[in-house]
Image (tube, rainbow, N blue to C red; front, side, top):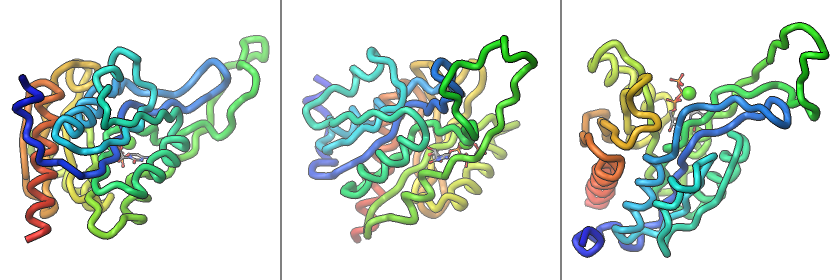
Length: 236
Ligand code: CTP
Ligand code: CA
């Protein structure tokens, strides 16, 4: 019934969505990772397809049962592991997308050197892992933006209070040059790995263009509403 009632307001729109969290290899058996499950990005892909869009979902380290929710004739799934792989896959996907959403949690740093062989205790001492900063993928997508392309960033923050949450989000939106920024508060018990989420969506002018809480699918619906509003106000 939900599919029958879903508006088809994204018909003909081509979208690229990244989801999940990158893993930066240390050696053949270890990585630096984060707690992103990919559920919010998968919900964004599924919601867009239900509303008529054609979707490329770049999935980074998403469990099969989570990814199954994105199965739809209009969703093409591409996988990426590390931030570098995600950067390549998103550059490809964005090249012919009208809307790009970077929902993936990208590792800020990666080990300078990846060992071909497992680090072992036999080598003695406690290893220290030297890190180097990963390129900012969404900033590169903004720099390579096609005319009229809308780019949406995400931010997961652990603020002191709501004012700090919004202030940090506005700074991030400006720093990255994204059109819309979806910000959610996360913590040990909130945001990651859970079924529910609560977000604010900052519009192109930095004002709050949408708010949603509840299931990740409900949040996805509110994000696409904000995208849809922004696209139609650009056209007028
Ligand atoms: N992002 C990205 N490439 C990176 C890091 C982040 O594309 N190397 C994207 C994320 O996918 C997200 C947005 O940038 O859409 C914000 O990510 P976040 O980690 O909040 O931003 P940072 O600039 O890394 O700031 P912080 O120091 O708060 O982690
Ligand atoms: Ca970061």
